[in-house]
Structures are given as structure tokens and as C-alpha cells.
Image (cartoon, rainbow, N blue to C red; front, side):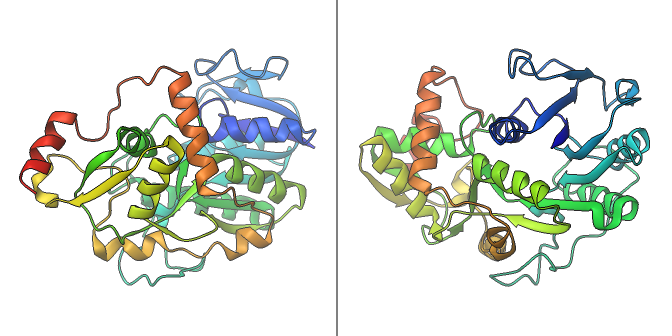
Length: 318
């Protein structure tokens, strides 16, 4: 199978390309060539820039499928489709759980959950516009390719090379052990998907030529915020005592914590993706691999989480 990847050298795209190559696919990468230029030697690269609309490198060539992991605004998707036309068989767009409405959602919601109204009049990515812009992108792909369109809506993706550092914070904190400040509810449900499971799902969807929309959420066994943190401690060989602290005492939100009205968004139904072949890496394996990767890279400073001094203040007042 010949696959064109729009992006593919950062996190999710990196995992997909690695899996596709293992499956024997003939992969071509399209991007600016700035991220991970040392990755995937021997894989053809076509240089272009989605922000400036430079798709000249895609003037020729045919592919069985295109995987769009770097489309965030309708212009990105529209220009890519204009450049490729019918020289691709299937267009798979990587979307987001942020496309769904935020209220009136019950636990176990599936891919037919109502989406937010699309936004097409801005390219500024904010908490309010990110999901609606993805909705507009989805609509464009389905309108152009119909039954040759596939949309994957991941939840929080975790795994090695995750630059967002959300799970990494809890891993590092749990590894230190002891009393852990938790400005949230221990029983809050948490859904995360291993980047390699997401990659395998995308490969299966392309191989089986499946249309439609699919949730990419995990792990296989439902977990909670407390369960995730304790699993972090277990893989790090430590023990923790979770200490609830007031959320309003924290200057910035901590990773993975959601207010109670948002909990059903962490209980989406993955049945359709599981039936399509999405694997279920045990949470403990995912976290152990992230911890090993983080230590291998030298545990650089994180953008998220409490400093030891901030946490000590919170624990003192708990």
C-alpha cells in the first residue's frame, strides 16, 4: 500500500509511520522537513508548507491513501485536497474528541454524539476554536471524498515522544513517592490512548478500506485519576499517598484533571474502533515505556505541573 503522510515526524505521526513501515507500506512524507529530519532514513520526503499553502511538491504521484495528521484548520485540508484530487484512494483525517458538544453527553457516548458547530472564519487555535475548526475539517473531507473518507477522533494520546508532557508530570511525581497533592477528585474517570495503539488502528482502517468515524480511546480497562497515578507509582517502584487539595488553590490546572460535568467525556465508547482492530496496550506498559523514554532523554524541565515548593505549600495546608 502506498501511503502519503501529511506530517508524520512528531508524535502521533511518528508512531503511525513506524507501524506502517513495519506492515510493509510504501510511505511518503510531506512537510517542512524541520521536525525529526533524522527519522526514517530512506523514506521519500516531499517538502512543502501547509501554513503558506505550498503544496507544489505534490503535483505528481498517486497514493492508495493519505493520512492527514497535521491539518488543524479548513484551509489546510481544503488546499491539500485540491492539490491531491483523485490521485489518492482514501483520505484519513486525524481529528479530535474536541469536536463533540460539551454538555448533555452521557457516559458511553459513541461516534454519533452531536458535534459542535463548525468554525471557518478564523485560524486562531484556542480552547474555544480548536474543536469547531476540526469539525469544519471533518465536514470538508466527508464532502469531498464521501465513502472514501475516514475520520479518527483520539482522546488524550500518550506514549514515548509525547511532547505535551501531561502523563510525564504524573510519572515523575509518582516516582518521587510520598504525599501527592491532588487538586481533583480521585474517582474522576480518565481515558488515554497509547500512540502505538492509535497507529495500529489507522493502519488497520487503511488496510481494510473502512469509511466513517472512529473513537480512539483507551485503556482497555476503565481507570480513574487515582488509578492512573498509582499505576505510575507502581511502574516507578514507589508508593504514593494521594492528598486532596482545593482546586482553587492551584495557580494553573494540572494535567488530566477535569471538572465533574466533563467526566462523561472521559467515558467514550471505543467499541467501533476495537471491532476495527484497535489493540489495547495495558496502561502499565504504556506508562513504563513513557517513564523509560523520559529518563533516556534526560528528564528535561516540564511546562506542566506543580513545582516541589508549590506542592509543599499545598500539602502543608491540607
